[in-house]
Image (cartoon, rainbow, N blue to C red; front, side):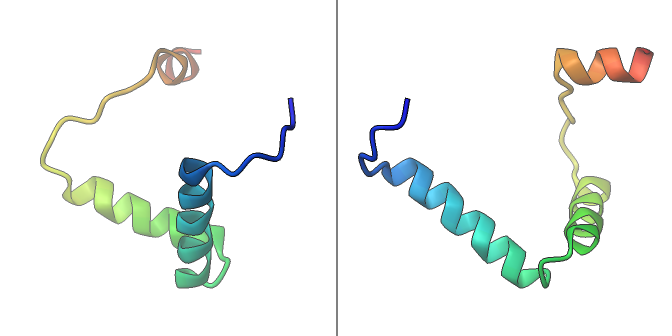
Length: 58
């Protein structure tokens, strides 16, 4: 359904996406490398969704 009402949460998500795209020169590989670096340095547990577990097993 498309009701064209403003949604602050969606607006915030879209702004974050635009900021990330700009920060990494619209290069998805650069963004992915940045995310891999964060994951390597992460000290906490990494939670996997049931769907990702199925892909890893499959």
